[in-house]
Amino acid sequence: MNPHLPAEADIVERIQESPSVFTLRLRLSDPAARGAYCFAPGQFNMLYLYGVGEVPISIVSDPHDPEHLLHTIRVVGRVTRGMAELQVGERIGLRGPYGRGWPLQQAIGHDVLILTGGLGCAPVVSAINYVTLRRSSFGRLTIIQGVKHADDLLWRDRYAVWADMPDTQVLLSADHGGPVWPWHVGLVTEVFGETHVAPERTLVMMCGPEGMMRASVTALRARGIEEGNIYLSMERNMQCALGHCGHCQYGPAFICRQGPVFAYPEVKALFDVRGF
Image (cartoon, rainbow, N blue to C red):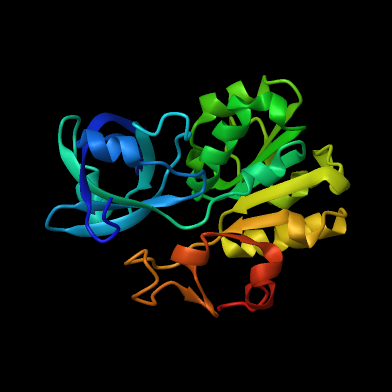
């Protein structure tokens, strides 16, 4: 696929996850493009709405089915508002995949802790799917999700399924729980004490607001997890996805090319600088 030009993709399914979040299942229209397409969990595509623009969206499906690509999209601007109106049978532009994904091959044989905060959980869903579909290749799986409000939690049914899997722990937290919220109320870092983490064999994959990730890195380091075993998915304004436009430059790196997934030591010097 030409990295500069979007290919056509058919919308084969549309799921309304919440009032402001929806998922599109896409299938590349050209059989040759479908056969050539492959991706790694943690990578993203640029989705293009004809005549409006394009946005970077994480791929949340698993690589075992590269023909059907799931993208969960939050309505935040002109392009995503337009995409929210699309229906099954319509077409959208797609180019990608781009970036560097999660270190899942490195994680084989290790315990995996997946931590996400706010509404930015889509980048880790593909990693969760990857681990759960290959469960015997990994050790203990811990999934921690923190949201600001109870109504922000997506995929409640999936969390229930994951929690029922062997050697898997799911911990949910909300800053504001509401009257029927059955899980922890407070900061997501407050549930770390409930985890059963063996620091010497645990690899962490994390995404969410950078304030939350900073606090989580500090808490995880205090529990003995090595810096090199903590991976972060960073977000910036990615417009070209090719490292040309410079909008996503983060020090010497471009989020769209060297990221969006970074080992913590790679970004530590800038990550600890508030507002950078």
